[in-house]
Image 1 (cartoon, rainbow, N blue to C red):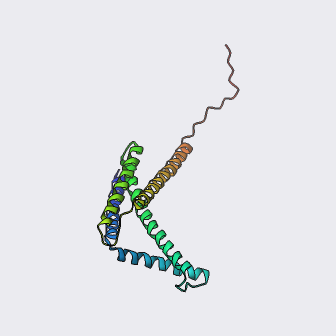
Image 2 (cartoon, rainbow, N blue to C red):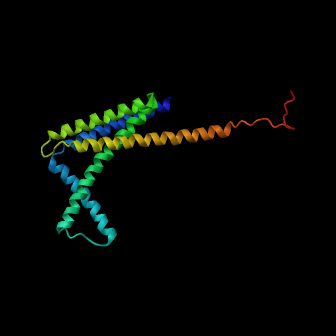
Length: 184
């Protein structure tokens, strides 16, 4: 019981930190947010060009299109990753304390939808940013994947416990010296 309480406290603290980080990223103006995404994209492209042995010359329509596409993918993966962590942490706490679990899953998905919607609403009022329903769906999908991770982890743990328990308490039928015969 004490372990559950400690885990819950740590998970709730991490959730609060995650909410603050998401709010901070959403409060960045459009240019600042794009600059951060661009920096990450440039780092990834730099690593890519080092691996393939070439170097992007920074020119060409195809390369500009690739950079733009990669930047969009990175931005959407960031949305997905933030909410994956949120779904993972939220459902891990709910799964410890709330029964039946399907109601807990529903409540966490609802929390994810509301959080993502409020995040997009917040971005609507930030200069240079806009709200996108697609981002709400990406965020929610990330959170659902986090929930699925917890479900899988719990199933693996419960199977291991069951196997250990069944190995320890194997019941064997008594062995008869001669076959049992009904004489009646």
